[in-house]
Length: 211
Length: 228
Image 1: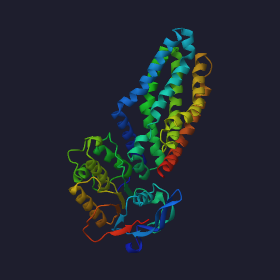
Image 2: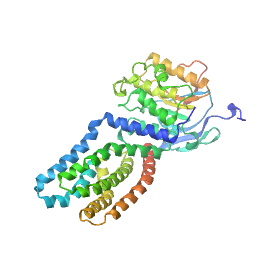
Image 3: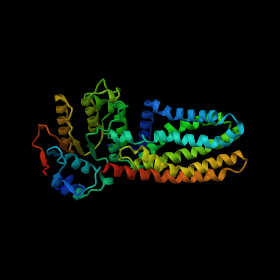
Image 4: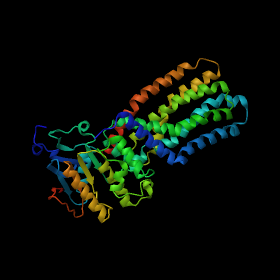
């Protein structure tokens, strides 16, 4: 580690844009995201927030522009597993319990040091629902089960698409706590949200989507 | 942090799909019932004439098993695409083709293996000589995974489209013709006391090719399906 962390952003976008049937989904974007930073992606419905996040996660191809990961052009096999994406579809199997769902995620990604499925489920507020099929959980509880992945899996960049949706007041506070702990530990996160978000520890960087 | 090895990731994937299949046991029973009913109806339709039933037994069992597999093929990736599990799988730091290979294996274990288990019963209902049944089972053991793998590629290709079922059947039927010809050829040869090894070897060769290539094709097709 010779380079100073400030000189080397974790993720850097240069004139990044995406076209769907030759129509630009959003105007070219330039932004940097360093370790320990939080970025809030703002924009109206249909302004391309989800598209941007899916592109950064590697689900969509890069339309135009460049994306750099730790100073080098982004290659998916180099940053595989370092990026954690949580989209509108939660990626939970409805027939399995939260515990089983997390065990599968851990089986594919590995675990953070010191994190266990049981402790993560207790922390996320699903104590007593560990073995209930996800199908029978409420929308907010499903969201929590998906958010538990953030605590369990090792990743340096979180891409969270509407993490506050369906959550109650305590759940929203919990997400903020998770984000704070993650950035304090040197991780970075990008969050899309409509609602007002309050963070302790400084103003988050804002990425405005305009069309 | 510690990344899991390939073997444990494969095991997690396989366990997941088998657990899911077990939770939906009714779906497994459907192809089995279908195959049993179809085979049972043949003697009623054609009459209980031993020589005729014996002559068609091998072919009927093969075709019935392959068609029964078609019933469950459609669902191979559908639920994973719907609930976002596939996105998570694509983003996982594991080779996607291998993980999909595990999914195909789990699908084969859940749909084709029960059919192979009841195949001797189906063959007996059609008076297939007992000596031919091992050859029939061998042919099925090679032809069904081949169909699962070819089917998986087509399911992945049609993943994004609505009402892909009919398209899938139309695309798959020409692909399973060689498998049926070789498998039925082996059974017919065994029935006539001729050497049956060559068609079985052809099936095995095709299976080896499919095992290597089909998961790669699936992975590419599903990546494209998500990238839209």
